[in-house]
Length: 278
Image 1 (tube, rainbow, N blue to C red):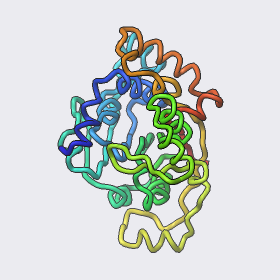
Image 2 (image 1 turned 135 degrees about the vertical axis):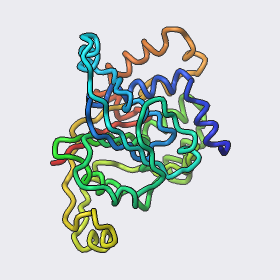
Image 3 (image 1 turned 60 degrees about the vertical axis):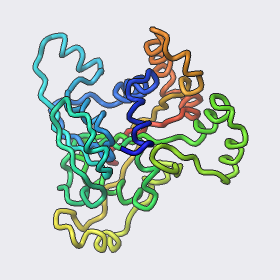
């Protein structure tokens, strides 16, 4: 595994990474017995969680307390990086395929109840629009698409407050600098603008002519059903604070309390969108 991937992998046990995933799972809709697609699944942390059917939602928790047997989710994870696939977490049963956009196009329409794509599209600049169009084709009529993305304003806040990288923050604001992550340069985008773009039928015919299972028709329009902020506060704190015994619990409550409030959501380090068909 290269050094960037190893650095990311090693953060799995840190309190800030545990908090991030706890927030993500709390914001996902409760599902059981569902067909789920995790695109850009990385090391499979989310796919493994969803395959375990242990969502921390009130609905699921109450059923578990009543000792009801919940049907397992059927999870398909797709990841283009072979090193991440080779080192995936597989405590629970799910399928992982090495692939990308072409793999999406081979899947039948309306075949998933939940699609998750977390911190992926900022690295897929050329394919971003096409990936989202495939999600619109693949999601069921009542299904939900979960998109998490880096938030430019939140990134500026972290550079200034947490890292004290004032020159870097100024360069980012001026468009003179691109933020590098463990996965390469981040290309920030606005999801509402992206989902308003509609592919024309001719372009779809050209793109899908070699894939029998991909229909030649206009893709369904998507709409934003919910919008959350993730990490509005904790990314601004010194890391030494985060090892306190009660830090995760207290910060989780604060983050969830403010996740849908616009003034905090717009400066969060990540933004979480739940999309549905219009």
